[in-house]
Length: 71
Image 1: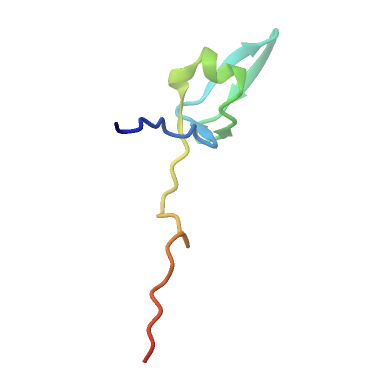
Image 2: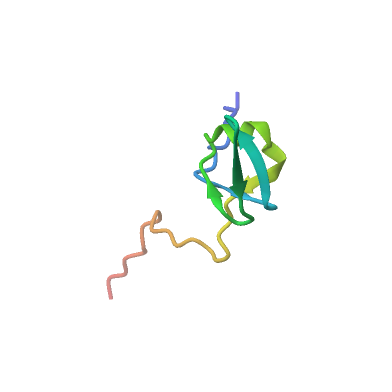
């Protein structure tokens, strides 16, 4: 039987549109593009205001072993 895996949670989220919210009676501003920890309690309160952090360029990896040629 195929094993079902869930994707790893994002390491960081970004604010999709700037907004101000109340946190424990204090107004707090979140600016568009600002990275936010996904554990921030405001993320649960305003989930639609955040999206995954996306890099504009591909991410380099060294996970594969390079082919070794004997000439």
